[in-house]
Length: 252
Image (tube, rainbow, N blue to C red; front, top):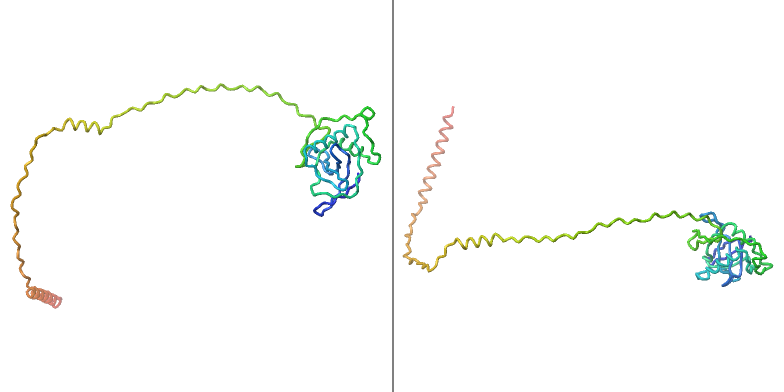
């Protein structure tokens, strides 16, 4: 496989191995080898729309579906018109969509690509028939995850046991409980008081006539003799002092 140099708009340059380039149903398309394998070991290819001097990513889902149908046609044994690719191309940074292929399908795409003779499609009767297994999908990259060709045998589905529904318990409605009405004790006490209390009617209240208010005779206070109190106090102090002196002098 020849290497194609691709100049990206970001300024970087990458090289991809050319697998095939063909004229499809809705345009011209180019296939590169991504030189990696998917989770199941299948080779990963990169597919872009070919403009003659560059590559563009395929965004239309309908166009992408027709490209996969074109690849199935080539793998099934019918050649499409192949195109010559220059050694240098230009492209955006995300110019391709990845796709996985089984190894036999990948090798067939490389071997039948002969752009120099531009061989027209060969009828199936005159060409060695290639049996194409059912299409299977395998996750490879976030953009696309479809593989064309053989795939591992699908797992045998185990019979699912019948589901027996468990009987639902009957819901018995609860009987509402009517609360008992009780008579407040206050009402009973009031009734008892009303029956036991004697009824007094036609009672005449006689208010006593106010009598004369007794008068109090003011008591005259005797005047305090300040001089006499002072003399008594000084006499008491003198006696106490004399007694203290006698006690100290008579002390053995």
